[in-house]
Image 1 (cartoon, rainbow, N blue to C red):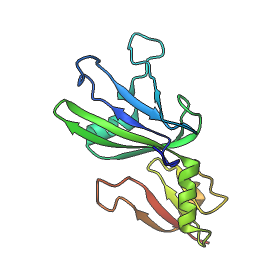
Image 2 (image 1 turned 180 degrees about the vertical axis):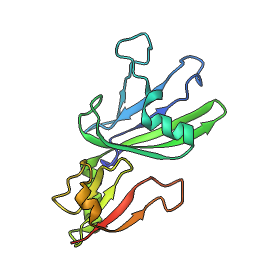
Image 3 (image 1 turned 90 degrees about the vertical axis):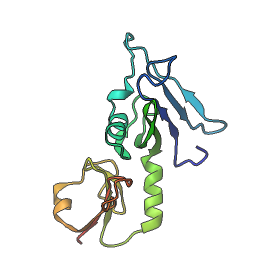
Image 4 (image 1 turned 30 degrees about the vertical axis):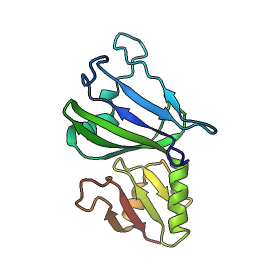
Length: 178
């Protein structure tokens, strides 16, 4: 977690896999200076603040499909109040399928994307499976927003990054007309 591209990471254990706790989420958040900090979650089902990670898309999809997932972009209201993407992979064990994940701030991911593409015509958009823009090299197409129908109509080329490989994230790279 020493890269500022990853701001949080951890493991969500399969329910019932640990004898001492029916649910357990081991999550660490990067700190501006110093070692990562453990993030506590209320895992008591009788509590008003109960965090049932097993119902979250980032846990449900990889544990049920056995495939990696990219969730977001979304605002992490329970943690750091910034737009993030959560990347997760299943980790099957004899005790059940745990989920390993990490949080990437959208602003940092966008910087990597822009550095790689620079400003080129036509516009290029990295699109998540929920239709939200992960990154774009066009100032009019804002990161985190839904790609507008008029932009979808201008798509000249669309490359499914998954390309038939289930181990890849379900993103699309779209080239828009001028």
